[in-house]
Length: 502
Image (cartoon, rainbow, N blue to C red; front, side, top):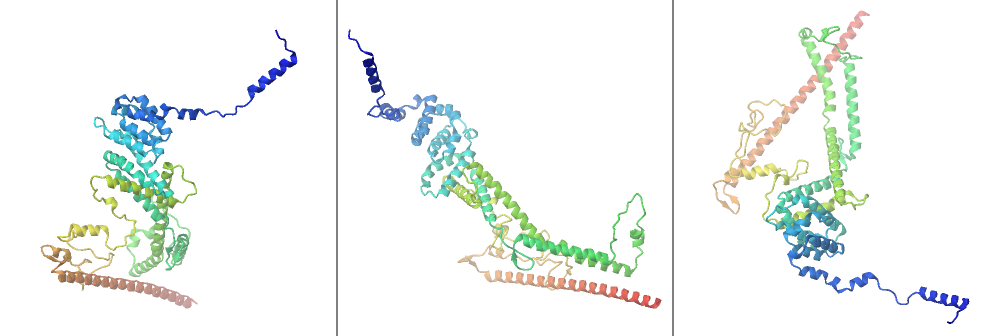
């Protein structure tokens, strides 16, 4: 046997170790690439499509849907759902992650379309709207189109066919969906309208200024009026320096204000009491009935309410879309979601079987600014009573345009009775029973004449009211002058008495 020395053995061992750890010159092929090159992996979807619907088991269908969804093969996943029979789809419906599909919009719209149409075609069972949560679907769909409106994606209309089929199913299950979306969009539009109406307001001086500055001026004015009223109460000795209350069970009886004492007043004492009370009233009444202060407080209240509503809607939108930045403009967010609601409403209108009748919710609300002097109710009343008379009051009279505690005579110059004008037959009643030529009746002149008479009656009534107001103001001025005269006369009498004593 050949013998090897120790040095030779060590050298040969080190050479073999070097050969073992020497890196390969040819790179290894990855397992994923090998898997992709396998023939059965490429033909797996085609084989699935070639399978009969009865051969697709629930476990296989669920695993296949998950695999196709994770690999972003949405069209193939939708095709698989369409090929499944109703029994298989009903068995896997509880295990399908619908919220994941909703969050993956708009890419998963084809899958949702196939799922909803397949479920709606199941005639033997009721549509499971509680399980699939149609409300969450519509909310995520609105969010999806709001994000697309924010990104200014011009290819968003490619998703409209899927949405139409989905909304056709949802509108059949939820008949009031369209009206609910209209109300939500109307609320967002109203918030957008009032979000920027925090500008200058009209002040009592006739100038425009900030709301809070105008409030400060009006409050200071009211404060001065109250101080003047307190000073006048002290001057007229109508109030004690330290007001005290009396009890009905114990203590001294208030003899000065007793009924027997008040029934023994003379004419001069009653007149003096009237003048003093009227003087205090004239000072306090403008402070209490400050129209500008009431108007400013009403504006402030409306701004608070609409800001609260805007914050509520913005918080709800943030819950449905968690990717909104904190520093985003609220108007931009509301505008994008309003556009999202508009897209869904338009698609619902396209798939609706018949046009819905206009409801009262579509009428302008009380807080909206109506440009036309004819209100919505007046227009509806005109249309409903086109061939007859207006619906008048129960007494057959039209109430006066000016309401107030003004004493009218039973028969005034303008023909009014107790503040009410004579009933005038409405002009539209002349249209009934007469032929029309080019949109005008032959009794057009009579109609215009009646309208002119009504306008003249209103002018006369207004002039009479102004004269009555002027007369009351003059009478009030006479009472004030007489009060000053009586006060000066009493002071003069006291001076004469003091002079006589000296």
